[in-house]
Image (cartoon, rainbow, N blue to C red; front, side, top):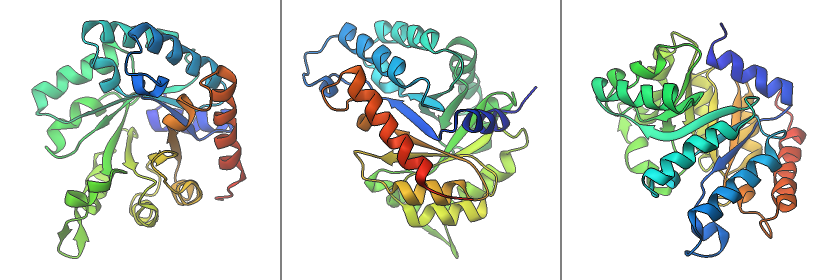
Length: 266
């Protein structure tokens, strides 16, 4: 039995890819607020077909499925069945509730939908995390220093000589007893990726914020992969690239992958 973090490293090495394709499937991305659920389904499958051999991971964002109610949950089930099994699939759920509720979320995301990993909020402490980390083969990425502009409102609050996100790093490191804990660190805060990596050597990073959010790809790749492993998430910049054709989507993914491969980090 391989731990999640070991499997993630294996997939990155075998594919020669740090690319994670985010599936944020909104109607506006297709150029019209009137796009139907079927339009989005077709497009999502197109994105997967175009990038499955290039990406180490996919990250479906559950909010874009849940907005459609029960039909959206059915679509998420269909999407999970569509993957080939050769990629890591991360459920971008940002869960973080008390222990009993967390157990139900963990059962839903891991056992029902079949995600390999999920994103979690650490705000409620260990009992909101533990139900997701009991199985070494399933992984978690804990929100640490996120890519949104107002992340500094809480995450950069000083606590003595440290910042709040430093405390999250320290806790995540102690929680990694099954080698299946990682951190979400945004590419829009490049100076802090190195700081967090220094505190958490070996923990995998999920780095969003590249592309439409304007994150620093070079710093993300270099600082994220020194003394550890990072996957770099691109959502809109790939899923809704160019004329939305499979060729345009694939070319965008190949371009990001090429840029990543040019960055030397070891």
